[in-house]
Image (tube, rainbow, N blue to C red):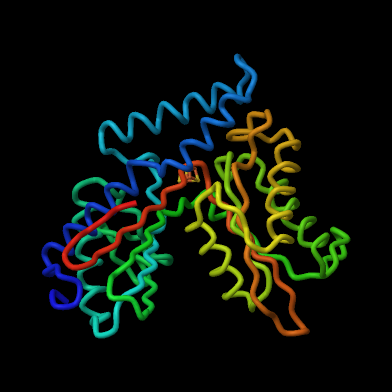
Length: 297
Ligand code: SF4
């Protein structure tokens, strides 16, 4: 590993621990900027304004004290791109050990339990957790994306199969808009709004959800290169913010901070629209390791 990316296993492990600490306690600048932008628009004295004030206070306290932003430190999801020749099993072992140490350091709550017995795994190392997706690429460096995905917002994520007769949603852009808006209406404040939607159009069920989750890697102020999807993203934010759901469901005009959509091809028999809902505690960070240098973003 050292020959490839210039870091020995101990240093790489401590970099992963630092990545978890930063992700758990410091929200990305683009997310904080977006929350501030909406905070400025809410009427002073309303419950929506006070909910956003509390959220901003929470963000500051977590950052100052290197403490988790939310008591639910979420599902720990790593997406990793690595150079040719790096042994995946060795990398997984390092990550699992880093997650155990990050839990012992209280950057993560011991969150993972057996689904049948409810017994805690204590160090967040369980079957399928942390979620680690490894992909080899042609670059000579390691790139890691980490998302800590809250459970409350995960519970309101959903998937639609078009056409949907109940919603009068056909297999077109208009149908996609209808089902995505339905997802926001059904979520109400339960996803800890204001949220961000990741939307995956097409694929099979598993691919659709994966695509929708990958959208969480995008910066909130980027612009979709596909003009139809750019229009869908803008329309949904605007429309959702007229629904009066607001921060934590307290009303007001801040229900969604952003929408990020992508598509993949499908087969004629299926047309899925997969919606991932990310709460305001939008914990996403990146790490790159090249020639022994570690950079966080
Ligand atoms: S949905 Fe997000 S903000 Fe709400 S409890 Fe879960 S992690 Fe925290």
